[in-house]
Length: 73
Image (cartoon, rainbow, N blue to C red):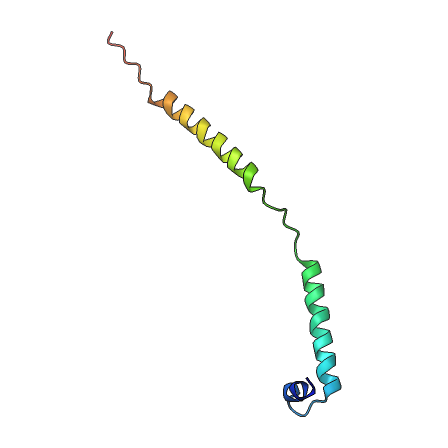
């Protein structure tokens, strides 16, 4: 592991600087994660029920609109 860390140290940086940069990166990642917007979970079963109900209503409206009452007066 020590050899790997030494390989990661670039431009003459020290192991200590490399570790500090990893810690800073992790702190920023956690800060970004905490600041992200909260998205409510998707309730797929409920969404399917609502969608099915909407399709049923569309079918009913389509049937009403397709009724053509022609009166020959």
